[in-house]
Length: 279
Image 1 (tube, rainbow, N blue to C red):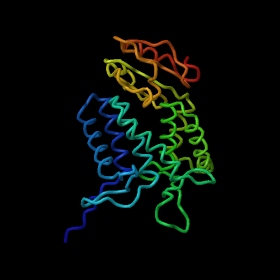
Image 2: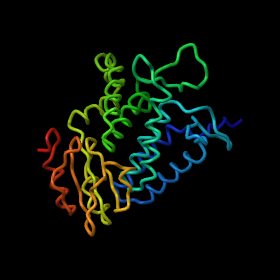
Image 3: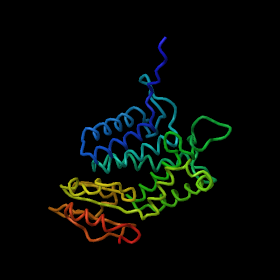
Image 4: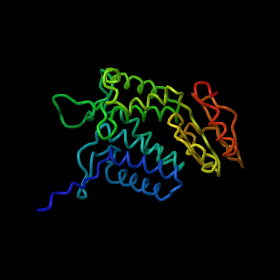
């Protein structure tokens, strides 16, 4: 007898895959990988999302499963932020921001941090928390990352404060069992190095932004617009466009250096500006 096949689609795992595919496609200049990321994102948004925007945990046999957990929302948000950075397609940013803002609405623990289960989920004697990494990053670490990304794109300081407060709930694990919270430590290390924002706007945005993908830059958040991005949708792009030109702004805490217009100039700027005051 053949063993049973577990072929369900899990939202959180798709979020992680979307991130990997988007990043790999951008780094290796392989558009087919980005296409796979888009297809996965659309599947989750069409088949694992309710009419009021809530996520399901899983999908199998043509039917959605139970309500989504913290890691489903956070992993999808981070994945969609990565897909936006790789493509400049504002729809992914919009969905990522919406999912990130819904996390505190449904998962907040009044005593600090987030529960793994939603406030309207199955009634439990004790709602659990997801603090430690297993094969995948913990829901808490992914939520901290999503909140910090939203802060970098919007300047919403409430997101940064909430991320910092949530990270503190893992303080004892950081001190005693750091290997159990590796993803959280990686996120916090990037912030400690000096979180920077890179805004590239214009018809040649993808070409000018190319140096961003030439090395690992976890402390830099990329926003791209080809001139038509709504600044109310992606606040980091507000007021950046110059008619007839493509410009790149490297900023730290939304204080920007003089803009540059070529990939070579941006490459030099990224190499010389190392955070904590932009050189």
